[in-house]
Length: 260
Image (tube, rainbow, N blue to C red; front, side, top):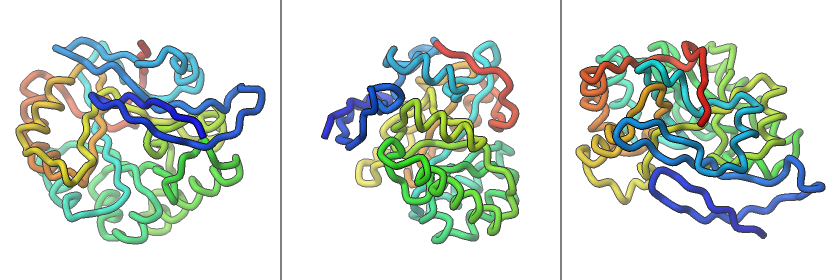
């Protein structure tokens, strides 16, 4: 067993993971971490050790930092009634997003899946059973991704699935390489905060302040749709970001990536 420090937006989390080291190359797991933006400055990858790995495999961390563009991404592992509200806001504001889903979500929320696709949003892969991908074999990793892709296509008609968000942001060079060979671009983030704990919601103003304080050109924003704070603040975040000159775009419109 080995402890890996994962630096999120403001939270230092210690995770324990079991993994195999084969000469050390490509097997060491990382938790995606970043130094968050303050006052509009650009964020940077927090751990120098995996900077070259993320860049080598073309993973998305930032968009074009010369343009005031924002990319909304949501992680959906389970549902507590708030995704409908999120979708209502996105529809009213005409904002595209991507929802990264698990097998549980696909089986449990078919109507929401169909609505995402019908309203022009992308559906991304969050793995079938939400394992630490660095601990599974290449074959198992492929199965995890293929099951989500196939089930999503059968349910919604979305035939292509190009984007992957690793469960809990844990990855290594092997998982990036294997998923890349399967046609996936790994999507990390440059704006996030501790929003996933449904027992620690602090109100819409808290979510608004956390997100708006980190905005920067080319930001990839990670939100969890189980957060009532996020759902309640989303409309105001969109409106006020636009007042600052930002435009919300789909990941399919991201043509240039910047690494720092």
